[in-house]
Image (cartoon, rainbow, N blue to C red):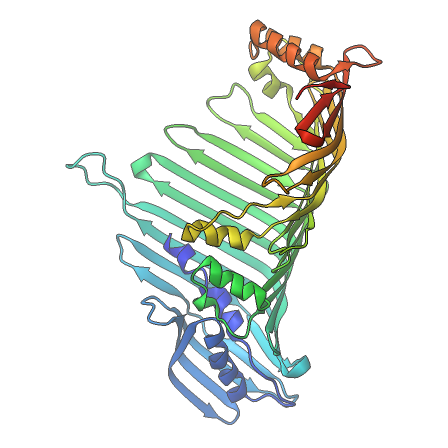
Length: 504
């Protein structure tokens, strides 16, 4: 929607704050650095009037937008005041935001603040650091979209989307480090982040609301911008690859305390209300020409309660541990690089009312569900070349895995438990990866689970027979009742063995 298309506007103000600092900053130097920084990200910054008197620069009617864009971000006024300690105090006006489109299709986004203060000071290597704080900062949007008519004689009602994001006790800093490539860093801390989102789509008989509150949110981001290509010039996967080769990079770290939230959906298909609470969480992201990595972890668990007219009782889900790690090469070239996937869902439980929806007679064990996946290895991967080939219709670029380590692949569900470990290498000389190595699998409680699924009608007898035959082909009885084991070996010539018996 339009609000998202213009989402560059607020962060653009931050990125514009670039340039070289001096021993004692002046208001004109700060202002010039913003205008110089605009070109780095393909933006145009204009001002209706400017006046400098006694070390105070007053700017009225600022507008910031990509060149020739019809709907710029506007700032009613900015005052830059030189201080005796060599810093510059920046005071924004009350009216900050943008308006786009018409009453039938368009809307507004506005930023309001209480006590917003920005101090510019000299940083390392001739850069400028901006320290900011505010008692409260609000970002609100309100947009209208055309409705959908099912008949020629119908006049559809328009859709409405609006929301508000509030930061309480906000403080942080922004810095620009000049060099061959420019490094922009943002740090943010807020005692509380509150948001409320509403959507009303009469054409689809749908209304939704979402509210959330998180405490002690902190964010640290570092963005490296190449010196020879601007963001506005990145128009294709090939351009993006060029920017990566020249040093484009993103680092991001976030932490937050406890969160609570509510959401509601009312529609012709499904109506429900949901309450959620979660403990503290962390996330780290790194993206450059060599690697993409994402690591996130939730502490102290999560609880979700769903109520609906279609449910006889509230459904409650709790999770004790949540963790996900992703690692992938981006443009590995001819040398294989590390990849990995780690996923943990620990002690996922459903209340008895939820189990009762599909298993009223408790045919299945209602133990907590555990999922643990830990895979790693090396591979040749070039995601940019793959995107370029897809866009241009060129020869497909296929990833080449060289190894796979299955440190853990475990699932506990309804009394059954599956665990697998193993290590494989791959021969890519024939055009596709041929595996070599072995995987060891242990399974307990499978028969009990199959019988339970038959009892509740999820699995038919003939399907159960097929499942048992498949397990019989690949597995042998273990040392304990209702347990199975298997050793799967991958050998030269695409030979596959299960427990010493050749399958292929």
